Length: 167
Image (cartoon, rainbow, N blue to C red; front, side):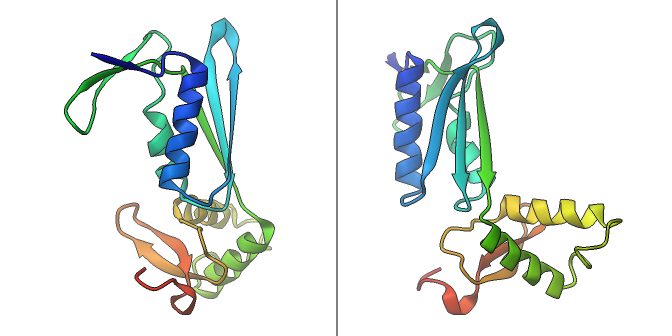
């Protein structure tokens, strides 16, 4: 059995390498920390870029529960590997105010939110946050809307005229 990532530093290097490979051109910040009872964790942050779930799916496999010292996984080639890991992985995605404002205008124009200045419209704020959460914002400078069947929500995508060919 092959052992991978036995120390938090090795886990961090593996996370960074995989994020760089899966999301080229996106700047991620990765910090290692400890909490109570020597609880090792990693905190991953990025601006705009890929959807939250896509990044979390990459980093989550490096997490093991607090009572486990290792996790066994089956690699793509069928080899069973023992992963060390960290107790917890936190992801935080931030949005540039310029892109957030553009997305808000598009969502309001589509009638999905109602007026954003309505103090009673807390539901609209939650819907808008969910739309951003599931949106892959890489390369989006002019957003448009598309329905994401998998997550059953509207998401922002690059406007058809601004999309790279083949997308």
